Image (cartoon, rainbow, N blue to C red):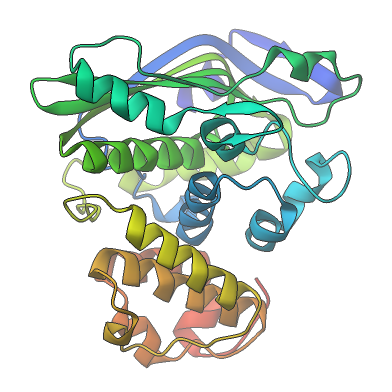
Length: 318
């Protein structure tokens, strides 16, 4: 973001939205599991990050799921009920006649570990043929390469919003990469992010400056993000999706003791955050007992995102 603020290569307004732009961005995470920026001023919405990644893994394209966590995303739906370009899970797991790619690529790497063909295609050329399409995929595809026992990932994007979209995209893509690695029984390697047009829209300019002014930007020793359990995580993900739907529809209420869920701690913590969000959305009190059950890292991120709700116990809207 700093280069976009200080030295944008271009000032333009695609579709009427004024922005600063640079072309051909590339950066690399040495450890794909360390996928989030620990900058308090950013007020990262970790609940949305996990929800979006799970929405992709579910293969769904409906607004009922993702619109609950990001109401503003509804404006990108042409029919008011579903998303086309943004619903990357539909591309990965089939939908509207598209092939189911995931099992084919798992088999590809098992049969030929040195393969360079493990590409999950997301962008569909037909998206550009729809006049006035409000939801064209920003992501072209993901490539996974198994090298010396570690699964490395590369994300290819035609465009990426440096302030709003990049953190959640990298979160989802690296979590998908981690799911893939666990299914293969491989270590998790690096992740490289490649973007054709990286941009910062003018309304986010001041907020981006505030993020860059946070001293945490310069920290070199950072908290470790939790890693997924070893082994195939698909059975756990399916259970998490069932609990997520029940929480979203307010059919259940989770208590801090999650042992009864029968899930690994990694996934139980995700559900606890969904319970926090359920209470935030319904303006219920997020009590100290629930917050204490979160891992220190997740608790800190939740407190940064909804400080009034979780620090004073006073329920407020999201």
